[in-house]
Length: 483
Image 1 (cartoon, helix red, strand yellow):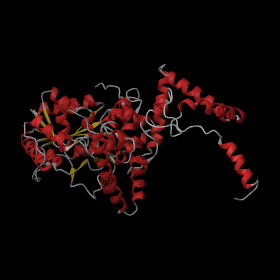
Image 2: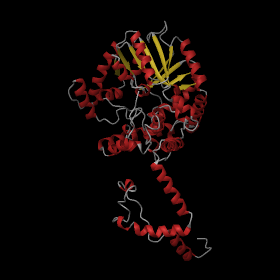
Image 3: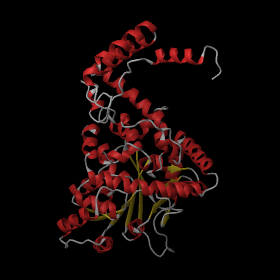
Image 4: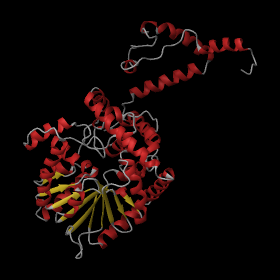
């Protein structure tokens, strides 16, 4: 698979100018933030639970090979099949081969970021296999031909009016203004898809190494139908989703639901261990687990950014990120958005495909403060920024880097020499005069400072520098005064 270079700067400018999107982003992120804050405040020792979850993920990721082998053995013991996919192409090929071997020409899917990552739907379609998303948000963006704009609310950028017009165009139904009517249309369409599909494809929120169990959390019930009604169930999951022990689930389920939607628990939590047994009332005859690498081993090898693999995909970092709340998910150019997208996309796609994303952050740390596994986003972002600069220097594209280093060396020379600093401060006061606005700030500066003043004023240099004012103030209060 080949991916285009992500143009965050261009796409984010377009998003900031979209009033409808701005309204939608404020509504949904405020709602999720409020619910998450309330839910977490009701759990005694919330911060200690986050610390414990981080320690478990750290130990798991550092021993990933051992836990993956344990998982494979236990899935097979339960009667399931395990497949290893080094990249997205191999993952799609495995699932398509399972479908063809069983004569499947129709697949239902539950929400899965891993399947979005490998573009499973388009690969199934090219293989002549019909694929239908059954999560309502995913169903909407599948009809629209778009990527998710939020990890847990994929169609957050669409209004009720957008969806009604989309349903009319794609499904041939009348325009509807009532959300309940729109949901009814989707439910009726999906019901027939569940009954006719030969295979269900899901992701997995967690996979338990010691039991071979995968766990899926959801609120609509579509994932449970996807994994129980069709004759075959195939689950695609990134290799980092593993946790060691069954008892660890109570901790991660406590953190996931509250961090994501503010719920104490999602409406449905499915525990799937192998295919249907003779005593089971329902379930698939075959169960396949596809373990996806797709660049994760490369992240694992980097001790500075390895903790990116701790993520449990709750979306809390998106809801609290001042950048995501302005630019939305599509500005990040791929399936993962917000702070987790800013650190994951460059590492999975290659730093040359997403060089702007590590800079799509103010480094305020709000993402780190709400992360249920305490990923140190600012630290990882700084490391990736360093890699971007080094890559530019190595590939001969370091012209900007050269001038940046030159500028900082010049700045260091000036600020470390008092007389030189005083001279340039006085000089810049007069140089700035043509650019001063009525407010006293600098409203329009030439390039490269124009990239700042295009959207806001730049503070003007004062006529009397602070060091002179300080001398005057010391005279007023007297040397040695305790005021």
